[in-house]
Length: 362
Image (cartoon, rainbow, N blue to C red; front, side):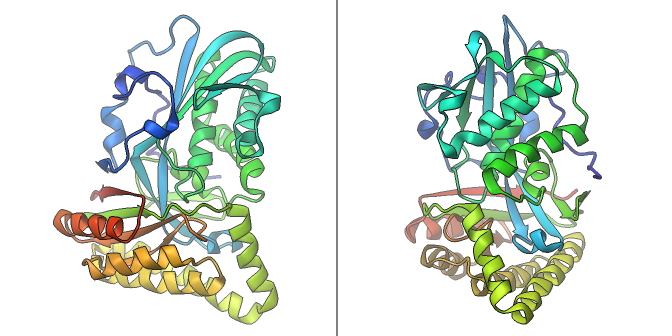
């Protein structure tokens, strides 16, 4: 696996630096934060700052949004993702005698009692402790997240990263990027069955990345633009959406292959357009990708409503982002003023939350 240079530096953030109170409920994390692709750096402590005190350590990761290439990436085509660093998950790891336990939404849950939707957290803790030859016991891991679950924003991968980094800091160990990736992928397989690896990379990267058949490369951005991400509030399972696409391909192999190839070509075109700073044609490619994803079976009336509202408000393009079947959409705006209008339009169209990200020139 090839990894990019621009990764978060592994310095997790103590809770007092994050601007919220100690871990209580996920639901009270504020939404609608506006931030650029490099915003995480202002939250990271100086390398000399002590971040493990009195048997406590922290790990964190951020959300991501797939600009283009979801689903086709599973079939060997490229995909491009953008970090959303203003939405984060934090894990706090404390020493505690007995079996591994998790603190989530105010409840303390033993690792063997985790519900199925939280099983990837348990797997992340186990594989991290094994990696450092530590017994699978003796820690309490509190999770706090602003990333909505099952929304296509990489929440499970970010949580796995946060847990693994917290345990790494707790035991004082070291992890290569390749090993870290494989540990997150192990947890992601519990969540999604056959993850491409894109989320595992994008939720740690500080810059837009292209992921293709296990290799990740930084994507050059020649002109800044704005992404507005809208959450429909409709939740579904990534594995179900992947199964829908595979079912379409199995029923109609010729058309399925055509649509997947189309998504692959659109993704390569988007890479060139990003480098050239051609935002209007970038938007047109996203519109085309949205139509392909809908035909593959991962559309939903709620995503269609937000996409239409974004275009009406001045977005140059809009599409499903992530697995689809609900979840989130993204829209591209050429400036902050239009982005504000798109955000309001999504809210008026029954979006439950929006986030605006400036994708900076690099």
